[in-house]
Each structure stands twice: as C-alpha cells, then as structure tokens.
Length: 261
Image (cartoon, rainbow, N blue to C red; front, side, top):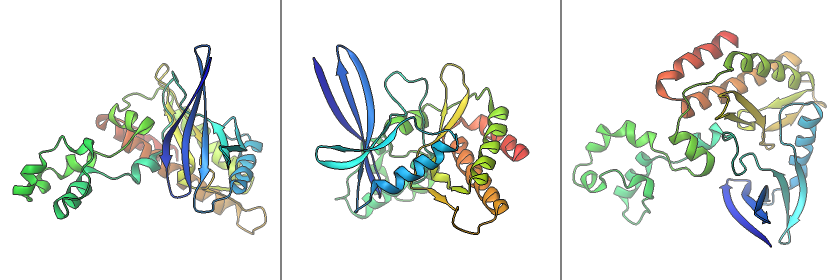
C-alpha cells in the first residue's frame, strides 16, 4: 500500500516549499517541491543549480523541473529527510523571522493581532498593565523567535561542539576561490549548514539558487568576486554561529573564523 503526504515547510517571497513524503511497504522517501510565486519561473534556478553542480561545489543531489497537481515547479533533494543525521538550516530564515518582542508590541497596539503560541509563555496581561516591563524582558522577547521545522529544532537545541571547524574553514575558503574562478557570485542566503549529531562535524550545501549570479559575460574582476564570496560566506557562517551555537561557545568559533579568513 502506498500513501503520500504533502507538508508546507517554507513560504517566502518567491517560492512555497513543500515536503512530499511517499510511504510504501513501511519505507518512507521524501522530496521537496518548490512552487513558484509571483510569476517566478523555474528556469533561472535550474540554470544556477547546474552551474554550481558543474563546478563540483557542495549542493543538492537533485534539482529539476517537474509538474505536480498541474503546477510547474522544481523537485529537489530533501535536505532533512526522516531520521537524518542532523539538520541543514539557513541563518537567513532566522534573520527574517519575527520575534516575540515585535509581535507582543503589535498585540498591545491592536488586540486583534494573533498571538502565536510560542509567545504565550510570556505574561502578556502583565505587559498590558505595565508596558514598561517589556523593556525589562526585551532580550528574552527578542531571542524567542517564531520558527518551524529544522530551524526551530536547532535554534531551540543549540549546538555546543563542532569537531572539524578549522578544516571546514580551510575547505570552504577553497570552495569560494573555486566559485570565483568560475565567475560565480554567491550571496549569503545561498548557504545551508549542518552539524552532524553523530560526528559533530560541520558541512554546508548551496541550496538557494535565487542568490547566485554568473559573471561569465561581465567584466567583474576575479579578485572582486573572491573578496565578495569570502565576505558573503563569512557573514552566513557567523550568523549560523550566532543563531545556532550555545552562547558559551560562540566567541571561540567566531574568533577562529576571523583567524582563518
């Protein structure tokens, strides 16, 4: 017997992203389906993926055009299938997420605003009586973000050890040179990071193809591309450390980034 389940796992400005899980004889397999929004076309994403794949940079094993339920979109590797060894997460998701500070402030101004369950752990009725107490709790309110899926899990269960960080930095720096050699510009949003639960090793994949530019037809200098790619990767990795690593360990890894970069 075969069953199929579709679950919305992301909804941004350009794509609605769903996980499609097929179960047959007790064995589950999953893919990701990217549905275009606002007249977004898959072709540019497909071209960017092929460019990254052809350069042998870390990326998805599958990324191709498909039609599901009459909608043309993209079928991609599921980075976080069931029983995976750690979760790939995007710092960009955290950066753009709402936090309980902004939500509760909006709620106090307009009680018709919806108050998410994640913010109900705070004493909102006390803030209504004494709005000045928001300032006292502001750090906790900002830290509590409205997330779901892999980002929610890793954000709430922060990483305390990365076993291969120095080697990872050296390899990633070489990857950014390889991208620049191939006249590819990679913005910070392109990178997804994972720390293995079993080995504690970190790795990354390029998995957002809206954030890539080919400069093969332009006169952008190699050095400018390299400087940019190194800066974008450093930004993404530093944000990963800030958002997903335990507070007591952040400074060690951020200092190491600065030493290698």
